Length: 154
Image 1: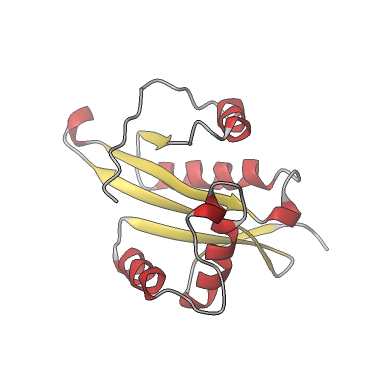
Image 2: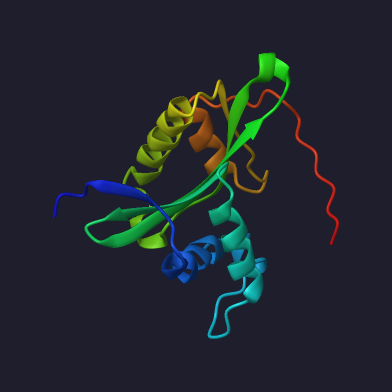
């Protein structure tokens, strides 16, 4: 086994595995629904992501196993002379593969993908309840340059 990572766009066959990875942490288990009955809301969201050329929901495999997932959103805006930025969301490494450097390799790929698309910036948010994740992002060079705010609608 060579531990080489392969990156590909997710298909509907990956959806249950993606949701399971999203649910596999303290915060995710309280907001994701994993079980025998799969919510149509996940399927609807997946189809919207798949159809949008500015979205890439990616599966990462190693030796034929799904080891990580993330979503890249490419956001066009007027500032920075009509710049393009990449938003990284829903980054998860499967629990049994954590601590093996996969997260670093995932971000190297995501950053390179953003460069290929012509982005001038990669951004992400992380819940303040995830200090280990925040330290990890800082180790990659991300800087907490802005104060993020959210308004929960439901």
